[in-house]
Amino acid sequence: TNNIFHQVTDSINSPKKKFKMSLRETFSYLAKSRYLLNIALVVLSYNLVMNLVEVLWKGELKQLYPNPNDFNIHMSYVSSAMGIVGTFLSLFIVGRSITKFGWTFTTLITPISLLVASIGFFGFLYAKNFAYDFSYAVLGTSPLYFVCIFGSAHNAFCRGAKYSVFDTTKEIAFIPLDLESKIKGKAAIDGVVSRLGKSGGSIIHQGLLLVFANLATSSPYIGVIVLIAIFIWVLAVKALGKEFDALHEQSENPPQENESRQVI
Image (cartoon, rainbow, N blue to C red):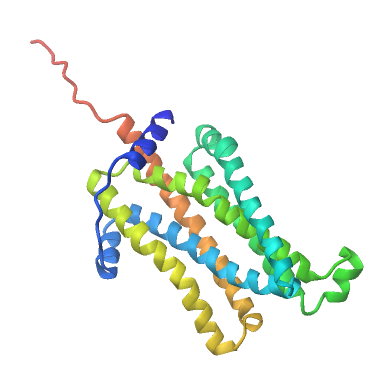
C-alpha cells in the first residue's frame, strides 16, 4: 500500500504531456477499455450528482434565507464544513481505510455518503408540500429547514471529499495501467468526461425546466436521476475494484519463467 501512495505522489509531481481529444475520440478510446470506461462512469456520476443537487439546494436555501446577508453567512458555514471534511478525510480516513479495507471500500465512501444525504434531501423536499404541519408538530420546524441542512451536508461532503477520498482513489485506479493508457485515459476522463458531467447537470435542469417550468415541479425527476447516477456509480466502483485488485496483484507478482532445468 505504501508503494501505491509513492506511485500516486510521483504521478502527481512528474510532468505530464497534454493531450487534446475531441468528444468522438474520447468515447472511441474509452470504449476500447472496460477499465477506463468504469473510471469514466465514476467521474461522470460524481459531477452529475454534485451539480444536480447543488442547483436545487441553492434554490431552497434562498427560500429559507431571503436576506442576502443570511444566505452568505450560511454559505460561509458550508465552506468551513467543506474544509473540515476534506482535512479530516485526508488525515484520518483515506490512508488508513485503503490500508485496512482496500481500494473498493474506500472508494465507496463517497457515493454511499452522498446516497444517504440525497435520500434525506429529496425526502424532506417532497414532504415540504404535504407534511408541513406534521414536521412542525413532531420536529419543531419546517421541512424546508431540513431540506437545507441535508443539502448543505451533501454539498460539504461532496466537495470536501473531492480532493481527499475521491481524487486519491481515482488516481490510484490509474496506477496498474500502462503509460499510454494512463496519459490518454487521464486526458479523456479529466479533460472531457469531467466537463461533460458538469455541463450534463445543467442540460438536464434546463431540459426539465422547459417541460415543467419550475424547479419545484421537476425535482422528483431530478431525484430519480440522482439515485440512478449513484447506483451506476456504485456498480462501476465494484466492477473497477475487481479489475484493480487483479491488475495490482499481477503487477506485484509477475509470472516468472522457471530457470531451473533438469540435468539429464
